[in-house]
Image (tube, rainbow, N blue to C red; front, side, top):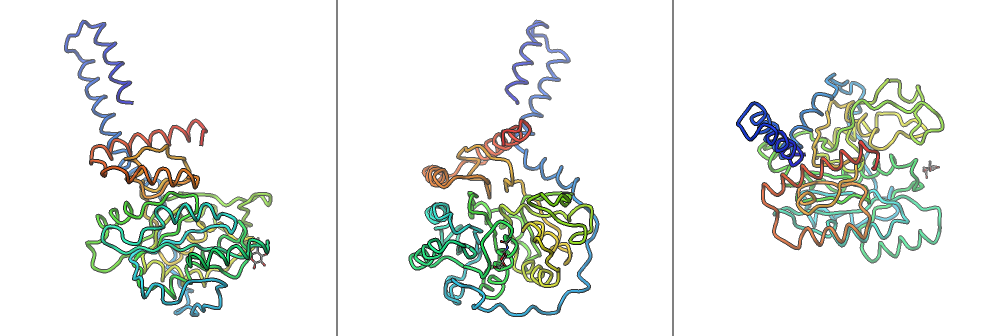
Length: 368
Ligand SMILES: *[C@@H]1O[C@H](CO)[C@@H](O)[C@H](O)[C@H]1NC(C)=O
């Protein structure tokens, strides 16, 4: 972008014989402007998003129960010891929503970011959320995998796309009951390159000054999304299931973060909000629950959401989550990201700006 404007300027100046004229100054301004825009692309994105976000104060949960029935370990077919968090004391616990057949994706995560136990001086832990496969062979394989790694949590529901909301409910229940040690919970899909270090850095910078944890619901915010009213749609929601014209703003389900207090409040709402059939999409459901208890999502440009972000080392060192990453790429990128020293401030800013512009152009040109 900047290079282009510079070239255009040279052309102009050639015609005017190099005299310092109006166009010269204009070009300098345009050039510097583009450079600044590139360096602070995320700040601009944050500002534009904040303009678009709904401002109405949500209902504050008049009908919420005072307490939630406790989660029992019998609700899970497979899970690590009930004391796993007591022992590991994770500051951040990440749950990866994964399908039983995606063994390769789970292994890539274990071999990369999911294998970390200490990041920026904090303990972190990664567990996998699955449901029940219909296929008996897969069921047996899962038990084997669990024996080997001990990092699966299996809920009592059929694992299918339509049941993803049940997976999230089972994650919330497990975290609430068995992991009170975790200050933050992240939910990530198994095709996401997650970066706990970038997340902890972000949280440190923004939220750690407050002594008490605030209600945080962080991710890539989707704004003013309308329910799909056609029964053929994968995300069909009838008028009776959801009466509003648009959903409350919510964080993309590919990766989002909840602070412990937000998790507790959200769980209250999750018990109170009736579950329509077919189930609402997982991320929409979390958004509705958050709205019910008056928690507004916080947007961060460091979460990629939909658009594919082309790989570049400094950009990936800075991003918290990058969607659409294949298992083999995850391992390759991770190795490369950690093979050299962290990028400089300028390197990271430029790379982030360039890869965000490329992701944006990719989306606009429909190459996503
Ligand atoms: C979701 O899980 C429940 C409980 O196992 C099952 O009865 C239901 O058929 C599943 N729904 C879908 C859409 O797979």
